[in-house]
Length: 363
Image 1 (cartoon, rainbow, N blue to C red):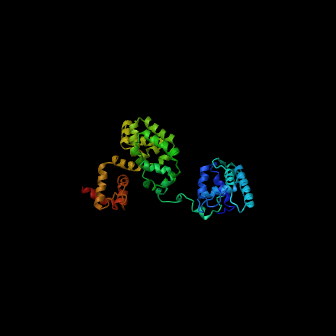
Image 2 (image 1 turned 45 degrees about the vertical axis):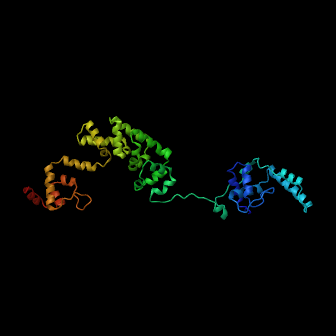
Image 3 (image 1 turned 180 degrees about the vertical axis):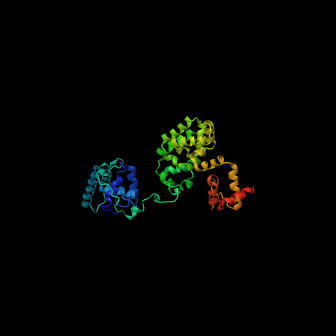
């Protein structure tokens, strides 16, 4: 099987991966070779790519002293055979040939092959070479699920082992791009150690990270600064751990936002510092949730109860008491409480003020 000129750089490029060829490797080649290898070695027609490479290398690499000795032995035998072509070699001659055969127990240096040009990725290959290539499954360029990337990402594999639910995370925009860019050792491991030191147990990490996977995008020093702020407000380590477990996004809030939230509840609810602290420890999502529902609900506390009751009963009488935001004709608590009677009757009740006053007389 002849080797084309285009294949020579490929085999020489492969040989750089091996520093020496030892005798056991050559013996293995001699058992599998299909053509005359050198100095009388022969093998079978079918051969592996490795054996084929070794055979070709020995045929072409003739610069070493071993090769020169082999050529001298072959040349001597050819002259002797031409003179006595009809005679069989004697025992002495056969012994001499054996002695001239290179000793394959010695190592053959391949350092001279480093000067050869590198293999081109556009170099054509034969069908025999192509069928021997084992390619890893390609990384999906686009996918709607992180499951397709788990086998390719050490980060995703470790998150799954921690109990993270990737099926929930992948629904969030840019979640996949964030996680696939992260290195587990450099970007994730230090955050996990910080959370465990904070008081998050191993069996709680999966739930926490499923809800707030974006904590991996936070700078570790910023996370430590936020915890230090809470400690400065006399929150104990147990309090902070409980708050973080119940409100995983708490660590994603800057010190300024946390301070504003605590000040808001203390001022609006007219609470002492201790009562404010007790409130957010029991309900830490007050610090991370939207303040609009809180502001709206606080208007119940600041409005006379009977006024709300009067308007509610009037709307019920008209069949318009609809407080579900998912349904048509929704009436918010803010509109129910804060509007003057004229606007309430016109826009909400769809009735006149006189009708409302008549209804109040029936109560």
